[in-house]
Image 1 (cartoon, rainbow, N blue to C red):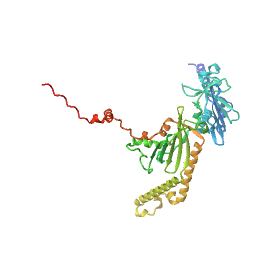
Image 2: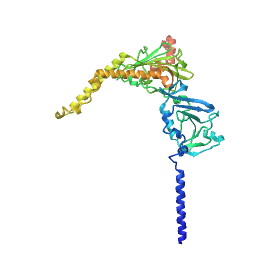
Image 3: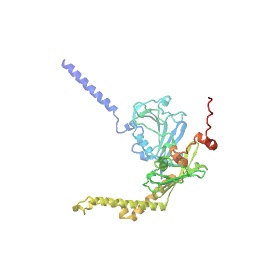
Image 4: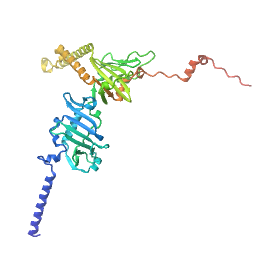
Length: 423
């Protein structure tokens, strides 16, 4: 190989390297200037998520799905009478929108938008959802289409722009107004419940109760003569109704009032909380209204019991600590258990416990007052219980027994002897 050939190969190699570097630089997203406009789906949202004050979600045929407003009481949903929005869900969506990068150009032909779900929501069969965000320097309208089945991400388009894109992030926008709601309603642990009383429209009642919080099972009050309690699981289950209670939907109470066939249920706790429930069924849905209050006498009794237990636990721990000490370490303060407030300052402890109880009632009332909730079917089923549901079934009478009851003489008459055989 001569010198000219070597020089030619070296020059070609250098040129190839330069071309590769240039192409690689062009392929890399730039971090300054106008590059951000082409890198991010919604660059004006970056670092400005907290500036958003309103979000409007629009579906096919220009139907408004949800109007989320940020006011003095936080985020609320106009379509549900101003009920509280699940801010965690909303913030997650806004952060994903702010971080979504445009990774691949798609069609700019509006005839093909429907394939990606990015057609204008004015269309009656539009598959995507339009998001309109207010509070930024200028209103922002974005269309979120279907998810990319191959490789992740979502198809998107800015309203008014012809170009559609594949964005890097899978964007999930709730299509039902109820799915934007904060659905946690109450969480009263079953082991706090002292008694449950259910009253039916005909006046019949069912009451289960515990004498003490430490009791393993609930008793059934006023069992009819000749009947027996059934499974303890059924009785105990009534106390779990308010535990991790969530709702499916909500309406202003004035728009969904109970009828004369509604059930009444009262839940009382050992520490004084009282929750009254009115529940009914209509058009295949289960509705309920709730009221919260504090029974001062029960609260006082509960605080006294809690303080007594705290004192007993402290004395037991102190005795155990002393028993494990050597003579040389009897006076070592570091080994002693920490004295609880119920022991060191019972009055202050009582004041704090009572304040906590009143706060719980106030927080529940803020959720309950003025609203009717649509409950999951299994929660309503736990309210719609009667005495018969908790008792062992009556023994069914056997056919022979029934016949004997009808004709007692026939049942006691001696059997006729067979005639003698002919010899």
